[in-house]
Length: 330
Ligand code: NDP
Image (cartoon, protein in one colour):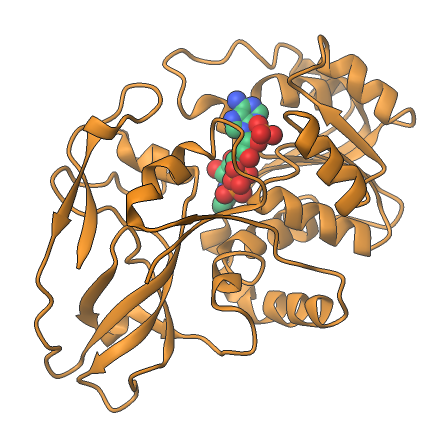
């Protein structure tokens, strides 16, 4: 079984030399252990933070060791009566084709959804969208919603939830392929190609002539600056992530207009989905019913094989990914 190890902390965008592929032997599982063959693993922007040395809300990846991240797989052999071969399990032991681990490291998942949904709309990605929109931004009827990285994993779920709840939604994403996706597939009310717009603030003002009441921020920087400029009085911002800064070696110059938060009495609420696991059941009940009603679909980009995992990871930053970025294994 192969795994991807971090060998060097990247400077800017990660390159192949920062990683190694290693072959490990998996002995039969001992008592209380399971052997898992990973089927799918997710690529998350936050992994870029963990490749660096600075401590965040999760510790950095260790050099010379396999990286980690959410994955779903199948039990191959079990040393515990609660797990049988063929069971579908979720773990944080991604970036590897398979593993042996104590049963406390895996959680069973039902087969009623496609396995990779547990990494997308029915997993942490979906929980992030749901918590950010309904709790951090406290979405209420009539709100006009602006979403950045709107075609991405979290963003595409945010847009679908806000639309099915009857909101006017404006999304920003890079390039014509993503504009078409936002308007034709997600049926958003406005789509901004931030890569083609000389002024994001002017573009947002055109797309939202009545202003915005909620901003779901995945990007930070210029996007946050535009949202501050166009926000209505009392608007709520869910600060989810700031991907425009993860690969940069310089601090961001924007936003330069934070004073708008004072004069407009805005509420800027950061949140970490991992700290909201107590809401998992309510979240899953919502997404299962929306999915069953055909109102919420998984949008995904799939790279095949562990060998493509670095391409998949970089696809989060170079615009190649649309929807949830996944690597299919096995
Ligand atoms: P995405 O699938 O959204 O992938 C990242 C997207 O960001 C890309 O599709 C890309 O789209 C866009 N992007 C990349 N670089 C830039 C840039 N410089 N400027 C503007 N857009 C850019 O990833 P996720 O859905 O996994 O994550 C989305 C955000 O949510 C991230 O900020 C992440 O850190 C955050 N997050 C936060 C969590 C929390 O608990 N707070 C939990 C999970 C994720 P494009 O082609 O349009 O540029």
